[in-house]
Amino acid sequence: MQATDTDILLNAKQCLDANEQVFLITVIKTWGSAPRPVGSIMTICKNGQLSGSVSSGCIEEDLIKRVNLQYNNLKFPVILQYGGTQEQNRRFQLPCEGSIELLIEPLNQSHIKSLEIILNAILQGEMIYRKLDIQSGDMKLDYTTVFQETGIEGNLLTQAFGAQWKLLIIGAGELSLRVTEIASSLNFQITICEPRKEYANSWKHTHSILSNEMPDDITRSMAIDPKCAVITLTHDPKLDDMALLEALDSNAFYIGALGSLKTTQSRIERLKTLGISKLQLKQLHAPIGLNIGSKTPAEIAISILAEVISQRNQILKNIK
Image (cartoon, rainbow, N blue to C red):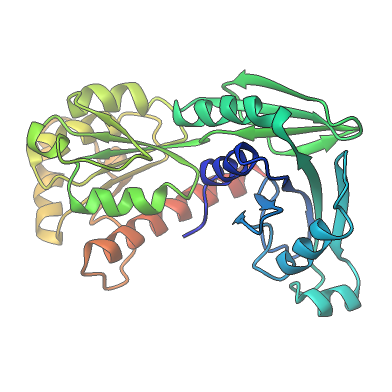
């Protein structure tokens, strides 16, 4: 599973705590068929520890060599480009005509406090900007509520940390756990709504916020955000329908409900009697997930998130 920004930055802090030199590597520009998007990060510790990736594995080995040889005494950030020529594409097995530009940044003990602030912001569900002068290495942190793509303007790198997208899951059962395990690496802030004490007490996943609010209340407060997805997974109409009634009258970019075709038809009829229009019902993905013949909780989780990601990527495509 892809490492999250939290995992990567925590690895950097642990290395620094152990007095090991660390390099933070950020994708700042891409051209053509680049393997990882702008903003992707990885860390390379001088003791050999790696976390994250900036490609599909084709340039990481070269980066390790550069860190240990060429950048051994690096004091300030440097920019490095891979690809753009046939020889480099062949050597590093980059996709056809793909090219990637990286910022290589040496970290030391003076960066520990900044890493702690960023990690705390991510865990609290907040968004924070890191603004880095790539000539001097000076860094400033600012909290924000508006996402901005990672990029460089002049000598200033602006990089956002924290979930841009929200995922509200109704129910804390086995399937919800599998969805959370996968979604935690997909840049979602995950909230589990579970008013049932026995289920709530059994929830253990750390990359999520557990709420005991009623489904209609929490959906009403969260789904006002157009970057929020709502999925109902309890199999209990009393809970799922409460969330769906609010979600179908909200800005949520994805709304999905678990259930068979028969269950879905019964749910649709109930929602109609409760005032939900045919136009609103067109927003509902039910039965939830792409039809990949999934049977196990893990397979169903994959099918659900594949559909959510498809919807999210369509939104991003339209924005661009």
